[in-house]
Length: 299
Image: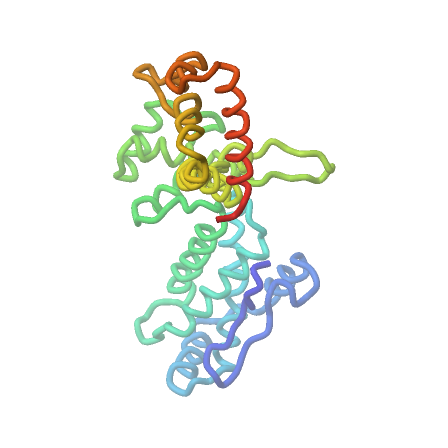
């Protein structure tokens, strides 16, 4: 059920009470509304005038109750959309009440003809709101196509190009619009997160649609890493003596034209500073230890 009362107040002065859930079951409700006596043309005219001219809610109630069977019949035609019959009836009843509220008995038209439009309109809106999580029909032409395609389509398989072209001509829409609507109507909703009823992980869209790189902890880790590679390294190098800094930069930070890190060897640096290669290695080890301590110490 949608949670909306099927018969709501027609004015602030009173309310009607009969709705699909009021008698315990849908079958009981349908049986009850089919037993409500139908009005003669004269009775309908008298009651409509009483409500329109004097806001007689009892007259409005009798007009609505006598046409509830019409709502049941109309709602039955929309069962193919997979929505509960009771919900369709409930929404149709709202359309019926809107029709009663707007009905002008002096126009010479029976209420059944006038109410039919309002009942269908309310049911259509309900179907479009609830049939799919992603809305299918937003324009007038798309709505017409949505509610006629099912009845005009022959068979349950994919339509042929000739059938698509025929429906497009009948409804005055483009063939590609017919083909697209058929695809969207035959497709099923897919849960983003899937079900986990048996306790096992299920491969659902959330698993491959999520952007792991945008996850907050990943963003913070990346920022911290970038900080260590820039400002953190710079501050750590400033704590080294000139020789140690020169060794670390040429051995671990500088790149050559081909993008290779480490532009100097131990022997090259040994010749530059006039010491042995082993001494350069020892200075390098101590410098790396100092860098590690400096990077782990908050600025």
